[in-house]
Image (cartoon, rainbow, N blue to C red; front, side, top):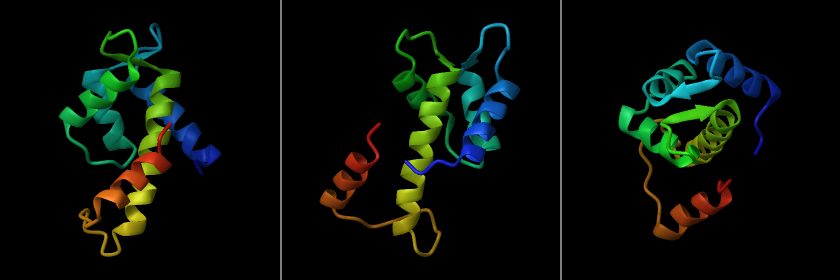
Amino acid sequence: MGMSAAHCHGNVREFQSVCRVVTLRIAVCMFDAAFMQLGYRLSPQFAQLVVSRYDPQAKRRLTLDNFIQACVLLKSVTDTFRQKDKNMSGVIEISYEEFLTMVLCNKP
């Protein structure tokens, strides 16, 4: 997926800065803050969606491994989006097939 070791270590540091070390889990209320500190401006609703996707026990918390998986996917999808967003406006126009290609190429 092209994620650098430095970015991965940054994710671990970010996880450690927002989770309770005792439980080694990050709560949904902290996940959107973690996204912001990693440079992503996403809504709390999106953070909840990501947590629900990567939280198999439905405890509204992510383990370190699941947090890193979510960050790897987010970075990969963002990189693919940026290739299409030539003006860096945060908006792209793509066909349905292009959308499906982006999804399938970034599927974990």
